[in-house]
Amino acid sequence: MSITEPLLGKVCLVTGAASGIGRAIAIECARQGAAFVVVTDLSADALQATAALVSEAGAQTLIHPCDLRDEAAIAGLMADTVERFGRIDVLINNAAVHEKALAPQSETTTDTLATRIWDLVMEVNVRGSWLTTKYAAERMRLTGGGAIVNAASQQGFVGTPAQPAYNASKGAVIQLTRSAAVDLAPYGIRVNAFAPGAVDTPMVSEIFDRQDDPETAMARMLETYLIKRLGTPEDIAAAACFLASDAAAFVTGTVLVVDGGQTAWR
Image (cartoon, rainbow, N blue to C red; front, side, top):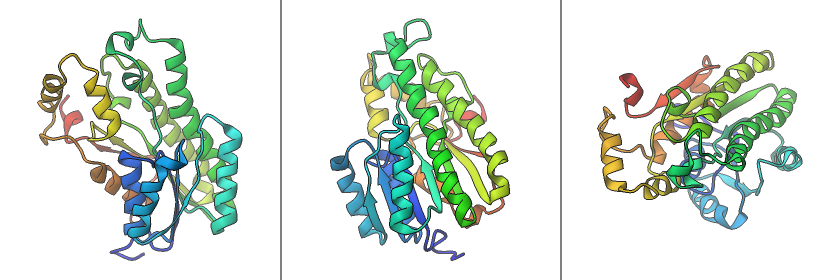
């Protein structure tokens, strides 16, 4: 393993890579020496900027749109990646949706949330993460192993008001991570997760913009952080790429919390 390039020569696949944390992860994979980075999201157009930045950072890139609600599309994504690059060394499951970005807060509590929104959050965040893990692991088993990194959340550990679907989905991702780590260890596949707090991304901005008083809501949240700022996509990318790299070769089945210290005392 190269100290300066811990992902040297790896083939990495990043979901939810069109913006925010996913884009930062794809770029960081390239900076850490990945040879190839496959970027996926719903829209090919939205991935163009990510792909350009990944190329600037030194990796070859492949844009592959994929709807994580579509099992056949996910299987095709993995097959196409292996056909193009020969293997999948790293899968980073970053794609997610949040009910607060889909409806007013008055309609996102346990007793007001629409069933269709609950189902969408679960379908993308949980079922999507399971299916990408399933089909990537199928390929990794044939090439001696790999690393899978899932996007959990601090909200998988603690209850947060007016987001029952997201909270439940991220708790499920944490348990999926642990279960997959146990099942896949015999094949040399490590499975871990990172759990961010609030991060300066388009999704978080949209959530706060829906508040009655966004500035006050943000200030109140930051009062609970030991490090008094939002996380950056780059903060989270560094954690995700550590878990993906050989620097974490003895780490599996764990969740790395990256939340500015909020859950240390809340």
